Length: 351
Image (cartoon, rainbow, N blue to C red; front, side, top):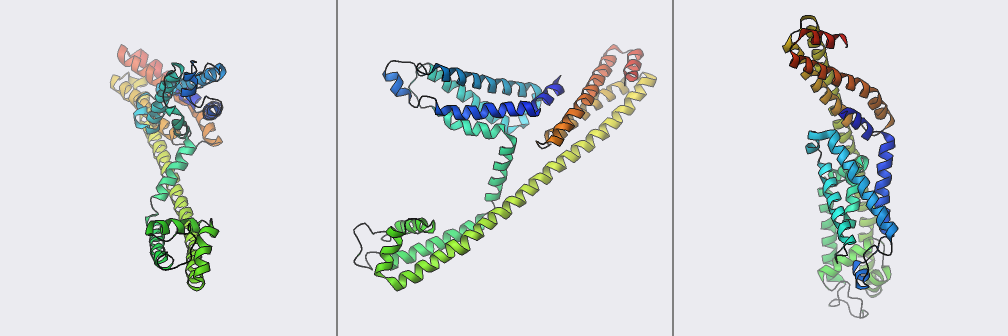
């Protein structure tokens, strides 16, 4: 029953349905009331003028809660190792609390809206892996970030000495971009995005054309033609390396789980054959425990599988066999409890 439920939760049609519910849960914010204070001040309930939105909102929350309950029932003790499931439960709990507060006309900020993207990320595996890979890749960019920061700090210090109102006279009243180190750093950052040339670049260039041409030309050459391509290439290389390492780790886990499953299954089958021939209770118990352990390894293999058609086909083909192993393990355990040799022989004969 548990394996069948896990297979249903991994079915492509069910995943498409849950993804559609999550997208609808994100988009319904367009039709939700924007401010509870405006509605309550008129003496109405929060959703009184939009009962359809409240109904759809409640149904979407109910569907997501049912999905969380089915996931907990399918994976049972394994959910403690699923960190994303704890995030899903926390987000759903806060969303339900916020929804009940809205229906009760409580004057409060709709805090659950900011949690909906987090709920979407926690539920969609591909998005989780993309975010995890991006964060790990960005964590390895310390050297490039430090180099970029040093260049901006040095350029801001030089610009505050060359183009401040203490050094140059004739600026407009609002052209104080380089009077302090902080404003100089901010102005150069804005300039590096190729925005706001008239307010930053031209005033200094008009009053100090030679120094302005040399300084701003060197700064834009570094930021636009040297530093930006270096940062982009570094981000791409780190992302590709981290994605490859993550894929290799996942395939390694799948291979180890599958190898362990077949090794345990081979020993369990040998013990089941021995129990069928001699009615040994210890062999029955060993075979039953072996089948259950093999099911755990097979489940780990399916959990690490990517979300593609090949993995879905593997789940469909493996599920009936795993259900058969589970039935056989239950029969052997029942025979151990009865203590009769006939039950063991019958369990072995139904192999």
